[in-house]
Image 1 (cartoon, rainbow, N blue to C red):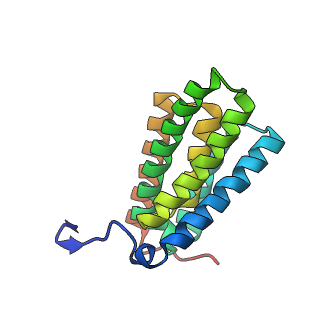
Image 2 (image 1 turned 135 degrees about the horizontal axis):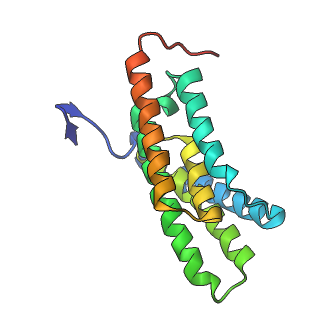
Length: 171
């Protein structure tokens, strides 16, 4: 696909060669988070704020990392938002028939696994965005809070863009 005259791949080249690893590792992440969420029962709204804080850390402490690129941050958050909202609504539908804790633990694990899968497949890896997907599933969401998060992420990216000549990796 061409954008502004530049060829951009939507699906990572490595995905075609290693699709089995992508699926297996994403399923492993899903299973691990389902177990953790089922055992801990810790569902705090801070998960969503923590993802935003982690984004700020990555973008400003390690601006040249692949996960700090505009494509990764914005693409990762779009994927995280879509996955989180979709799985939250799926869990709400199933919740009426099955125990709430079990349903939301499974949906939370799936949020991590599906976000990981889609971000790696589309070359938009941004780990904090998977945390946002998890937070949305566990906490629910309001349209206004999603707009604020999205605008905040855009603000961070614009600041990074304008300061790019002065930013260095701090590791």
